[in-house]
Length: 96
Image (cartoon, rainbow, N blue to C red; front, side, top):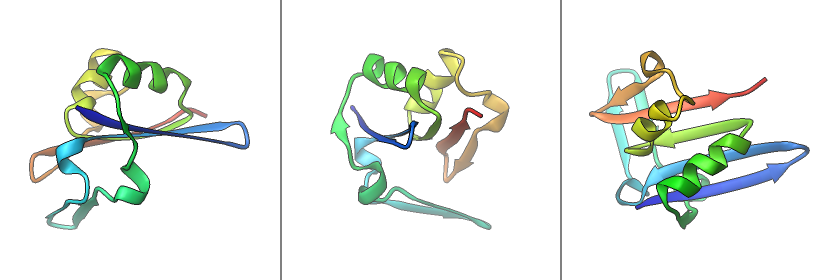
C-alpha cells in the first residue's frame, strides 16, 4: 500500500508517494543516496487510483517504489528518467 502526502502552498502542489515498507529506510549506491524520510514521505495510506489522481494535480512529485511503474503507465514519468538505487525505483516530476 502506498503512502501519499500532498502539500499545497502558494499555488503549487507537491506530491510525495512511497511504498509503506520503504518509509524510514536509506539506500546507497555509488554516488547516489536515497533516504525515504518520514518527514517528507510520511503521508496516509492511499490506493493507486488516489495516487494517480494526486499526480494529475501535482506541480512537483517525488515517487519511490512501486508507484513509479504506475506513474509510467499513466504517462506521468518517462521510463528513461527513472533512477534505481539498490533496485528501488525513484522518479521526480516537475511541471513548469
